[in-house]
Length: 188
View 1: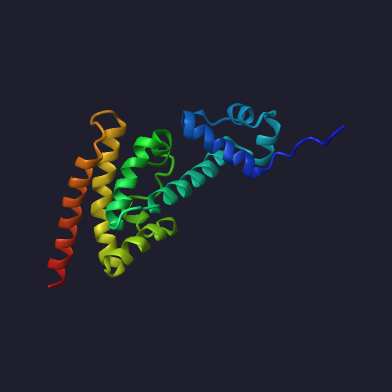
View 2: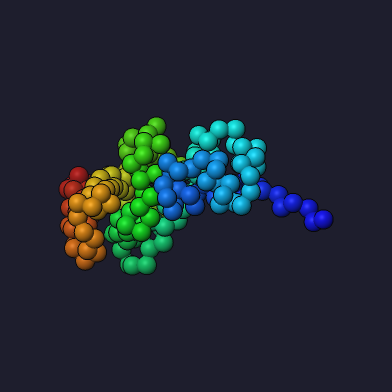
């Protein structure tokens, strides 16, 4: 008789992430995750004492996935590419977007606290290098863009506006240009 397949902690996290991605984080529970793994609920509960712990692990994976998505920029203007990717992420991954930004699950940090978080370093670094600004100036531009793109993404994901990438890119370009002009004015 062959040995039973061992369900690892990473397998459980990946399954919870997929549940969140396909049907929403509110559907992460021992039953849905075990169904994804084709096993009983025992391995799920073995690795995670509570569903809250499992959701935290799935949230961390979703956050990593989101960062990778944002920084995969194919255009010459990195800050604009990151902004467009943020909005595109909301359109393509609505359940993950809601989990990350509208569920209140990680309400521990405000935007201004988040800007100094370790998770945001890759995004801020890419923008800083592309804009050739110091870190504080880069963060100012980031906050302006973040407020704009999050608002745009939230409006689209809640079906109050259609997704038109050309129009979004135009609006984003205007916001970005304005943020850079404001920084230049401060430097005078």
